[in-house]
Length: 387
Image 1 (cartoon, rainbow, N blue to C red):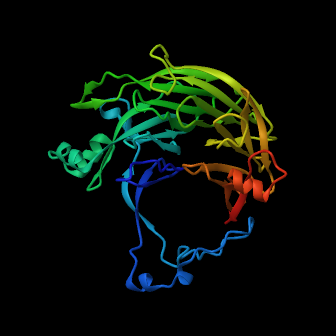
Image 2: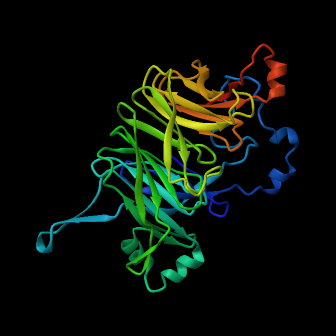
Image 3: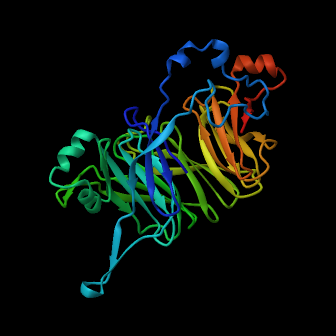
């Protein structure tokens, strides 16, 4: 699972491997040539997307304008730290073979959290240091030495340094991790195959260890309710809601009272209350996301989307405090829908499936819906590309 919410100055993508290695890559964009600049509008126009279920005609080796696509160049390779067992001549050093399942950036892009599975379930947090800071901090070390000591990666692009390993709460694979959209204190939610979701917060106090700042984390809450494996956890845009989903075919909506969240008070200490348990999927729910309702789904400001092993996507909306299934999309994919992504303005949704395809859906505006679908009262998502 990938995450790309980072500052514009960094703009990398993340690739994670079952070998527990994380690779941060930087996009290298195509520079237009004189021939590109002289091309007529007809030669650089984007193909029509009026056919809602047609395959894209875009060449895999070029973009919509016929130019070579952007490429990704490796910036950093983050590896799990070396562990040791025993002492003296009987000491054995090894690197955990736990697969990395998902990664997520903090709101400011300065921290990266990655969750790992069995046999060593944990979440590791790396911190980004800009080039100037990273250079001064590593003057007395070679990049190789710094990487060995800090389990990070140093280059002209700055450095990522491992600051924390969060473990000891979950007994099985940690499948999903998400930073709350607050600046301070940092808050992490992690979902596990042990049927629980844990909430971790940073201690504002910073301790000195090994000559550098260390982030102090505490597990403040453990949410229970799912019957078995929890597959995904996600916050809404302001951190007032949390959604979880799992193998028990359900989606849970939790109200959050976190310090630093809009509408919270100084007395809020990270309490959670279950608002709804949503049943409707016929199999394992794999992914869940929040999106803006734009006033077209119920009376709530946000909707929740879920995808599942039953090959469907469901849109859940809120009306007078009650959550309900407002739409079920079941005619696009023919196999498990593993993942969903929502564009920043919620105008587009992307789904990825085991059938080997990616579908892109459009959320129609109120005026478009009135003109194209006058008989419908609810909002509407419809596929515009099927790749």
